[in-house]
Image (cartoon, rainbow, N blue to C red; front, side, top):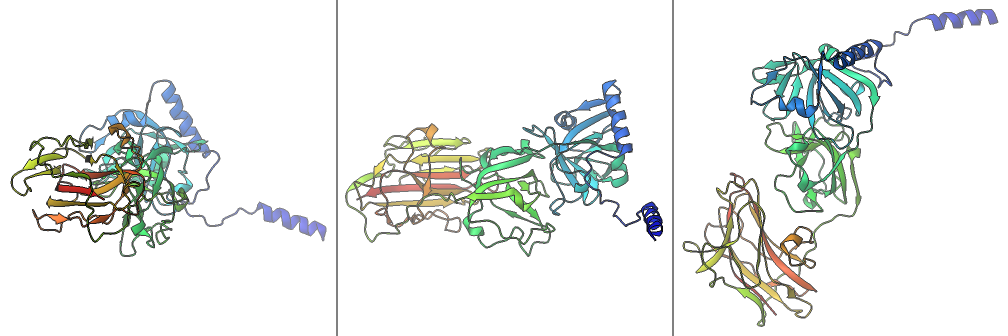
Length: 476
């Protein structure tokens, strides 16, 4: 009997295992397969003896100097480290790689006709791509440089799966990818394709109760992000999530702030920078919200009679930058300043700010009052008037700070809050009419405060508006 069991066991162990496995269902190898190792060894030998030139991602991207896709003719290769994953379905038939596991300087997209590629091209995997006869260019209108296997018109097409295994060679090395730490205002197009970590960020309060993807969106949804440090950047990236992501209907974490990590890229049409998550676990909001402080006492029934500060701008020289009377007039970005003007639409001499036809990619300007002691003036009120000329996508806000040091250099590091009771004309208001702010009650505020009008706009069609201000009065 024991002999029978032993023979049966030997026969069982001798039978091959024919269990079904999907072609693309690779386990993440500690080392690549034998044939792949041999191909990589051969490539490395060719690099060492000068038959193949190994380029950095930056060098490869610099070869593309036209709006059209191009084919690599030279015998060159590029090395990178995978930073994206399609495990959650947020990426599709593509992966991104950057030039180093830590402190990257360049990234690039690789288009591949393969799903579940995370099993093969796992995050941190060191890969070499043989570029001869491959193509580089945008995949559609997104302007994101991509390595692909063929062309459809002037658009890059994916590498087919079999061909990809011949030209994308994995080493046995998988490295920890350390995200490049940035704040929201610091991010720009130079970071496309890199795994970045946005520090001190949160979702706006008005997104509370919403999910990563709008249920009515067929493809993807963009959600705004707010910075807790630095100043507002109208071109800062939004979070984009695919409708096919496994976490598409998870609620956005709007009750805190913290760090969000993902791959920077562009939206489908190439209009805006977006950041895409590998997993919702890459959103770590473990700090309290950083909403700006407010002076929200509402409105008062009557103005104070003791003037603490006022300006009707009649002493200013028209078409020059506002100065004197304790004002700080500061250009943070661009070339546009708060200037005095008279003529059509003004109340004698008024102040205006606008970026129409300025040519500036972004305009940010401040007009800040001298310090007002609200502790010594506990019943203070504030009034002013505003008008607009097609303000469109630009914004004008009344803000305040209790810790600004009075220098232009200190504006960006000071904490600025908002005064929601003050009405500022909206784009929907009638052109050229003037609107009262209301009598803004300041009685709930204490300390020494500077008030500021902050304008944000740009030189293109979406940020081209002009605002006018006049008759500013703070009284007790």
